[in-house]
Image (cartoon, rainbow, N blue to C red; front, top):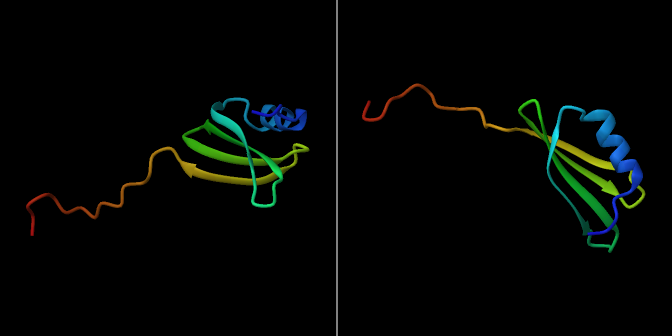
Length: 79
């Protein structure tokens, strides 16, 4: 893995004090640009972060750790 830019650590330290890393790594996009991706768990939310090679945040997506249950109240065997 390539060395993580200092700005990535600064951003994560500032915004995710209570969170913990699930994974972090580097990839190249279709144009060959280096990107860093991190997955951080905090407060039952998974944060997917993507940074460029200079450490600028490009994308921040979230999802719940546990998907909501969309069960409509019917029980097994009930018609």
